[in-house]
Image 1 (cartoon, helix red, strand yellow):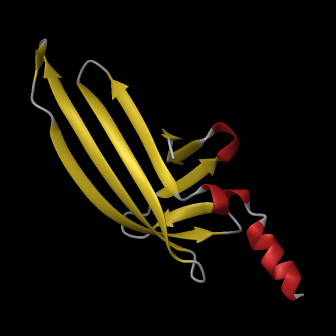
Image 2 (cartoon, rainbow, N blue to C red):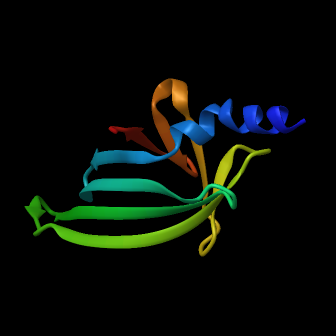
Length: 115
C-alpha cells in the first residue's frame, strides 16, 4: 500500500513538469507584451506552489510607441492531483499544463517552458 502511494505521485507527469520558467510574447496593434511565470514548489506534502509573474509591456497608439512598463505579481497555488491543475488562491485562476508540448495555460493564454 505504501509503495502504491509513493509510486502514484512519482508517476504524475504534470507534477514533475510544473516547476520551472515559462514565457509568452505577443505583439499586436495596441501593445507588445512579454510575460514570464516562474513556478517553485513550496510544500510537497501540501501540494503548494509559489508563482512569480513578471510582465513587461509597451503601449502603442497611432504609430507612437511608449516606454516599456513593468509589473510583478506573487501568486500562491495548490496542485489538485485529481484534476491535474494548479488553482491560484487569490484570484481563482486555473493553471493547466501540456508537458508533451512544453506548455502552461493560464485559462486560454499559452506560455512556453524555457527551463
